[in-house]
Image (cartoon, rainbow, N blue to C red; front, side, top):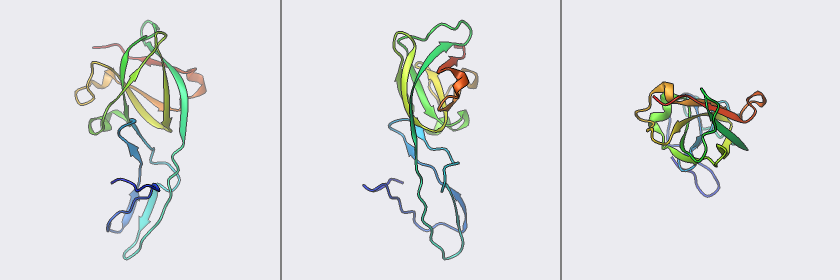
Length: 151
């Protein structure tokens, strides 16, 4: 489903139930978390509902380092995928380039993301090679992500 120019989406008939809505942008590699205000909508028979999802972006700089050595992953092509590992197989990966110091700029909504080495495909990635992180990073992370060793 896509939205119109005003960001509005209309769903055709849905059976009575509680539905969880999320917003996704495959081109930029993000998906909203399901805990957004308004993301849970309950429909009863012959009822319609309106809700608004406010997706808030957080811009920030991260430094990607090798987990084992602490060395910066400078000038690397990495792959960003939204969601936890189990959902990575259904999304379009987005390339992320690091600078010589291993830094990359991200502008993403709150949520869970995965980062893979550029030569890894999300459809065949070993779960132990996936760096999962919550965005924005907590303060104690200091803006550093630690990439698991390649296997």
